[in-house]
Image 1 (cartoon, rainbow, N blue to C red):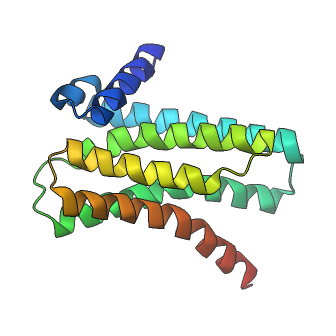
Image 2 (cartoon, rainbow, N blue to C red):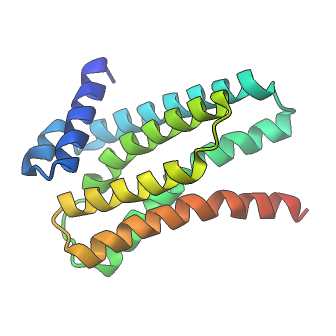
Length: 174
């Protein structure tokens, strides 16, 4: 992954938001593109964890493991929402058309989340809402009609909000 890859992803998202049909040219929708997206997401998660530890200090090992798991949960949300979409709609394209841009979206989400944590600004709800809206725009860019696109955006939003709460409840149950 290079700086050019990140620049291309930014251009691709700009075209998605502008409803331009040539957004796909800015993403590599293959295994290498997915690997670059995972690398960008991993770097963003690492940066978010470092920023959080700068503000709150380094947690005990078990708590740090839970922090890492909590930061990786958006990947699960992206895969569940994409799987539901491809299962219950007539979308016949590759799921990489959702996953690759979605990985860059989640990377930006994690960077903003880390900066907000460092500054002490409570932006979690706003970050989730914007991510859900951008999921909707991604679904529209992939040619879905309004109802499935809204469903994808809402599924992404709900999963991003619910999965960390489920982890919290699971950990406190024992």
